[in-house]
Length: 104
Image (cartoon, rainbow, N blue to C red):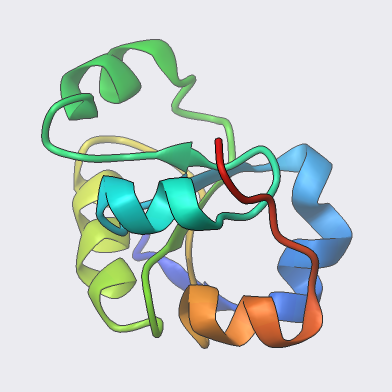
């Protein structure tokens, strides 16, 4: 089992269309603003995500500040995902320099 890796905001932005972005923030925060194309991953839809997402698909986990995403990224590697990243700086870091989608 390969451990998760850290990834910078700039690297996520440049690879955005090639990865699954799993936003683990609460649904209210996700609805208010999120990274375009991100999936709001919660306990309610975790089983579906694990079943429907190919294990070879790179996954970037995003939380508020880049701390909780590390635990979630480790969990996903333990579930068999081959390439998992925790985004350093989290969503709060992203929104400072990158566009966000809101109200969806």
